[in-house]
Image (cartoon, rainbow over all chains, first blue to last red; front, top):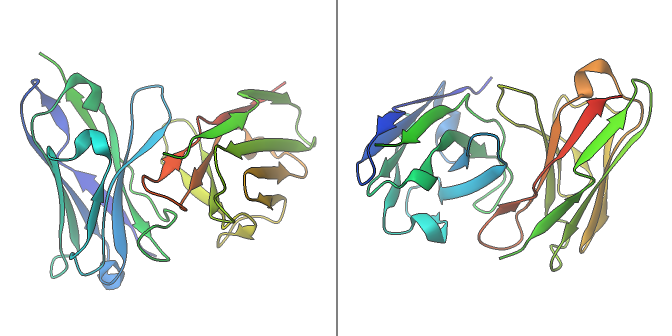
Length: 120
Length: 107
C-alpha cells in the first residue's frame, strides 16, 4: 500500500519561508505525477501545484506562482514544496497526493497533512 | 477558472436514507469530475473518478453520474460512517478546482 507522509510545517512570520517534504512509502512514487493541495482552517480544498513523474513539468495556482516551488527527488521517493514570501492567507493544512492517472488528474492517496501557520 | 457549485451545503438525513448530492460546473468538464469524502481530522478519500467510476475499495452504495456541467453523487443507503463532508473536483482545465463541499449530517 502506498503511503505518504508530510513534514516541515510550523509557525512562520509573514514574509518568511518553509520547505515541506512528502515521503512515499515505496518506489511507486516514481513515474506518478504528484500534487500539493491545501485546506485553510474550517474551509474547503484548494489545489496548489503539480509536478510530473519525471519532474520536468510543473503547474501552479496563480496566487502562489513565483512564491512556491514544487520539486521531487525520485531517488529518495520524496516530494517537496518550497514556500517563500509567505502570507497570512497561506495558512492551511498542506496535503501531498498522488495523481494515479496522469498530470491533470484526481488525487489518490493523500498524506495526513502538515499544518502551516503564517502569523506574527 | 471553472467554478464548481455544490448543493445543498448541508444535508440532514437518517441512517438508511438515500443521499443525493449535486455538483454544477460553470462550464463543461466533460466527464472529468471526481468525488471525495472527508471526515473530521482526516485527509480526503477519493470515492468516484471520471464522474461514475468507483475507486478501489469504495462500497457499491456510492455511485456517481452526470456529464458536462451537472453531476450527482448518490449514497443509496447511509451507513453511520458515511456522515462526512463531500467535495467534487474537476480535472478538465487548469487550475484544478474543488467545490465548496456538502456536509452530510445525522438528522
